Length: 132
Image (cartoon, rainbow, N blue to C red):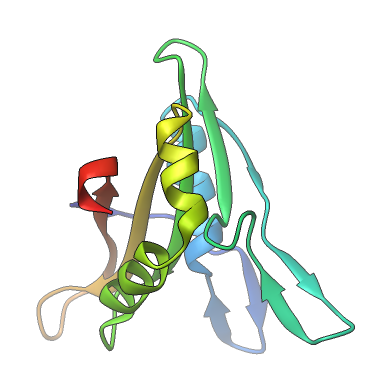
């Protein structure tokens, strides 16, 4: 878990909107990863479709020699646990993990003391073959 002061991505009126995907991309790039969004919006059926049904972001690190798939979400209303249950039911996750890929769920929430500035806090869950 970490606290991050990541700047705005874009503005809608006077409200600053930052998506969990954009927060994750910034954190990954700052940590030396090359990453890309692999979640796409399908206009025909009007839904978002993840790579293999569970990956929003694909990240590779040249020094760590790892390939990391990330599901990015908000950390409110039990979203992380919902995503974890959804992913555990996806048979492709085991294939991904057995092929050497790593997978984590990254959940973001704005937290801070009452009356103080709120910062984005990241909570992660790493899934392994034995957890699936």
